[in-house]
Length: 164
Image (cartoon, rainbow, N blue to C red; front, side):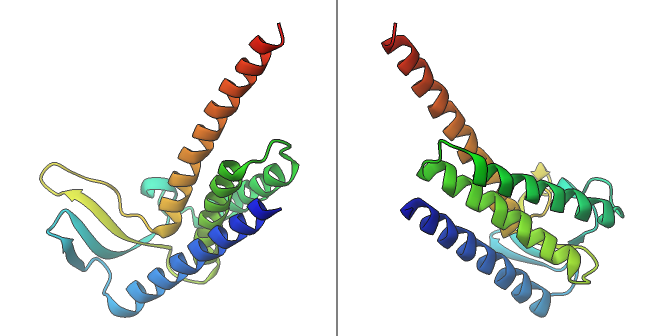
């Protein structure tokens, strides 16, 4: 039961951090304004993503809202019905679900798009598309979920070889 409380705390903290950082950026910056944080390698900027991941399919906000809600529902169902929940699984799902919720809230809030504000890279070499706390939570959560699957696979192989 403790793992579910920790997952709820992770989800809540990540969602609050996402909402708060987006609010601070929207209330204190102009669109496309850039503020250097770590030289020009890490910048704050205010961009509205009217598309999907990495800015693909700009202008299809309604489509991505529906897809996001469906994926959120699937992730919640997966969390509920997964039988081998450990702390790593619960934490990864909490991050993914909080990230999805954060971006859904943006799409439903009447803003021109999802608020993205973190810009990493070099304009001369490569700059990663702007992202937000919710996006980072989804990516970290997905990475942790892959680690969970890897560990589960190793455990199942170990148990299978022990039983022979």
